[in-house]
Image (cartoon, rainbow, N blue to C red; front, side, top):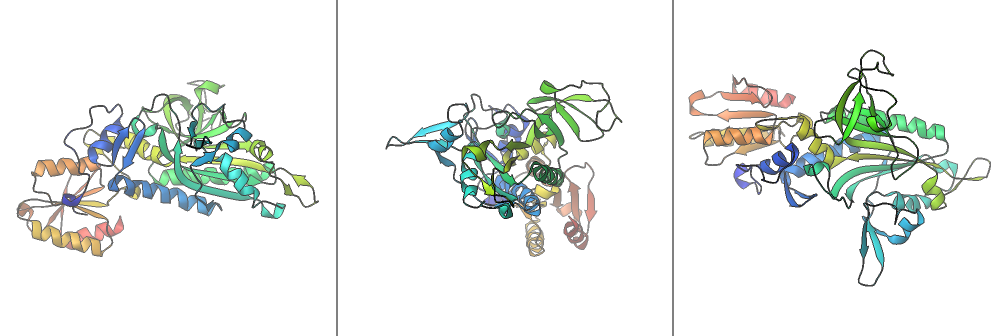
Length: 410
């Protein structure tokens, strides 16, 4: 992509109303635009990042046997009345049509996936079953804040599983937990597994996947050595005590941002919708149900909060919109176009800043965008190309073939 052709170019200044790092940088760099509080448009740049996050979690959900579906966001009122959530979930958007019928905008999809699965699950031979989607959710937050970390419209991967026994659910939960840890690592995050309340979904203990960040909304105690972490609101341990899991370190206090969760839903929803299966003895039984959420847009915001500096965003290579940005200075347009076309021919995701702008402005834009590597072509450097990693201050002069070789290794 040539930057001169980009519909949403980096801005000189951040938005005046930005209250968090992710809001400031994502808007200024041209990844999102705010429509209103808690609602954002994802630009072509932002969508490239979001698609890579989606595909990372999609790969892991497929590995554990999840089957992808796409469920409606507009739900009939009756489904929410059936579960008792129409009046009890305070963030649920209620809508009324011109004909007087009432609907909900999906803030979660238990009320849809359970009757859907009722058409599939008839026998123990149909279990376990795991269905997931990557879809938009809607929550009537009193105060949408923190950029894309807490919105009224946001995207989430939500998976729902059904099991014959509690033991099988526990087995599957461990598989999903391991898959989550791998996926977070792939997008450049280290997540702690935090014990928390089940909230609106269940009175059982749930598990949240937390990333340490000052922009987080939860106070937590965590172990620096292992994955142990606990929400301070329900904690029996305190800061400074030995980690109850590994025993190697003292617990520290911090702020965490939730990027995923898992709920043991038990049999609540299957009983509400009368979803039963016939076991091996011919008896009708209710399956055990689980729910597994991953905030895809929230993950994008958390990454910006965690991996940025005073110059801008620093994307992990795996989810950066482009692997490299070419900055061509005056007189080097022909050489830059040749390099740009060669990189595309080698399937390198490349952005070329071909604008008629000052070197300082181009360098600032490259840093703001957070692309992993920057290549500068200037008359001063002759036939060599200046290579700079976004995370480094130092630069290198490389010949043309060396650049192609290094990029092929990214």
